[in-house]
Length: 224
Ligand code: MD3
Ligand code: FE
Image (spheres, protein in one colour):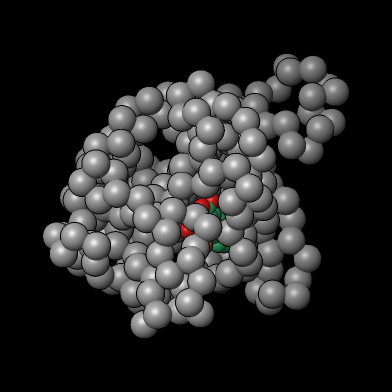
């Protein structure tokens, strides 16, 4: 990033949750690129709406038999699924039996460019998980370990209402650091940070001018 947001008033910077444009290193190989995709947000959201018309959001069952609070869908060659059988990447939407919609070039390119920005050249995601949070919805602490090659990074793009992301350590017990994720923010992590525990605090009610009362997170991975 070339612009680092300096010049805003000092009291805004004193607020740990205030984040103008700029990038922040969250870990050895974990980066928050603030506002990085904001200029593409409207186009991204239109793309997401078209994807969701083909593969609607749904609240999957966890292996433990609970329904997830986060509603999900996917695009790309594979899609992440959860069921009584466990967590799986599948080539078809289990609800419709049809292949997941293809990953739009805009999404794939933004993910690859964000990864490159953070030092992961050549990232070619084969899946994008679409997570939808409504007010009150949270994502409990977990690791992302359903992918075959854990040397591949993960890229996430946030749209809509802000959320507090919790960045933990290598064990569940380690203290988590709250990080505010806002509309247009990109997160990239891999390498030594790939297996950090993480979660999302319950979404605070609010209204976003483009997305309304929701947050959408796009998470790009190379599953195979
Ligand atoms: C940093 N999604 O889908 S994405 C998930 O906001 C998931 O919807 C969250 O966790 C969301 O699995 C967070 C950002 C993220 C995800 C995993 C990380 C950042 C991470 C793992 C290690 C470090
Ligand atoms: Fe995760």
